[in-house]
Every structure is written in structure tokens, then in C-alpha cells.
Length: 279
Image (cartoon, rainbow, N blue to C red; front, side, top):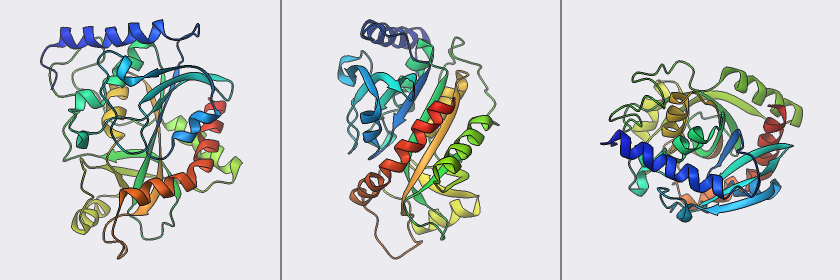
């Protein structure tokens, strides 16, 4: 939890200064894309201008999850200047919510206006055939530590931010249009956030399904909430890599998630690239 707002703001500004100094002559991008598990190949489509290791950015945590390289890419995608986060941070790694979303504060402070989040998720509906894509339109995070806990920093946003439209409605329509253009099947739905690292139990999945969730994962929500708090526009795309616990008799594994995400990476890359082009 943030205990000293002034110190935290100073920490954010220190990271901003380092990134500005390493932009390689580029302007600050207005778009930041976060690459989830197994989705790193999108960076290969970027006309790269620079690369910064997370370990070199003051205040950035280390990304330890499998498939998360821990690098900030600066470059051009679909004719737009973008940041790409190759790897993110999770509560299950031992980080607090303010650590998980620290990079979002930095991006917002730099002037980023659009945050595109991607993730690998478990499908809760019985009719999923992984891999499939979901454009997140809302989320459930009742049992998660709140990302905005602690003293509010007025420079970032209000004390009690509205959560009615965390995920930008226009972006949902744009994403659907891009998917249709590319012939990619996509659904809209509610993402359930759990803290991990253990997968959910079948009973938990049944409860989440009854609440209206169609997929579940261990990321994205803290970042989306913090981005919304700062007035950023958010798009979030899940790749359903496996069926959630109890939907089938299969046991869940991280290896399967990365493998199936890899199989879907070409379509995911095409979809995100087309989305950025349409912005």
C-alpha cells in the first residue's frame, strides 16, 4: 500500500525521467500495449526504435512470470508510435497492487492516452474451443486487493473514481470491427480477476459463472482500474488458452497456457495491429 504520496509521486517521476532520456529521439508514444503470457511475438512486428530493460528503470519491479521478458519497447506499429511492455507484474509474484500498476502510473504521467492490455485466460463457458478471443467489457474482482488503496494522489485522479466504463465502449466496437475484417472470431464478456498463483477451484468457477463472468485470469484488472483512474482509455483482449477448472476433466498447467497462447499469437498480433491502425 502507498503510505507516502509525495514519495510515490517522486518515484513515478524518476521512472518517467529515465524513459524520456532513453527514447532514442522519439516523441513520447500515446499508446501503450501490454503483452501477456506467450504473446511477446507482437513486438517482432514493431519497427523498433529503442528498448529498455525493466531492471534499468528506477522503481520498476522485476517480471518473473514465464513468457514475460521484462523489456519496454519503443517503436512503430501500424504507422503509430507505441510503447510495448514485454511482460507485466502480478500479485502472485509477491508484488503489492501499487507495484503491479506502477508502470501504468508512469505511462499516464508520460502522456500515454490509450492502454491496450492483453492476457491469457481460462474459459468459463462450456462452448469455448481454445484458442479464442474475448474483448473485455467489464470485470469482477471482489476478492482482489484494491489497486487504489492508500492515500489518493490528486494529480492522478479522484478519491472515489466511477467504474461504470473502465473499458472504453468505442474501443470495444473498434475491436469487433477489426476482428470481423480479419475473419477472427471474438466475443465480448466479463473477465474475473483472481490473485493466484493457484488456479481456481471448480466451485469457484461455478460461482464466477453464476455472476456472469465468461473468462478468468490473474492480471489486467489492477492495471485497467489504475489507467481508468488517470483518465486513460482502456482496451483489453483475452486469449482463452484453456478451459477453467471443472469445465472438463483436464488438469490445468502453465505450460499449456503458454503453448496455446503461442498457437494463437499470429491471430492476436494481427488483431492488435489492426486495432492500433484503426485508432
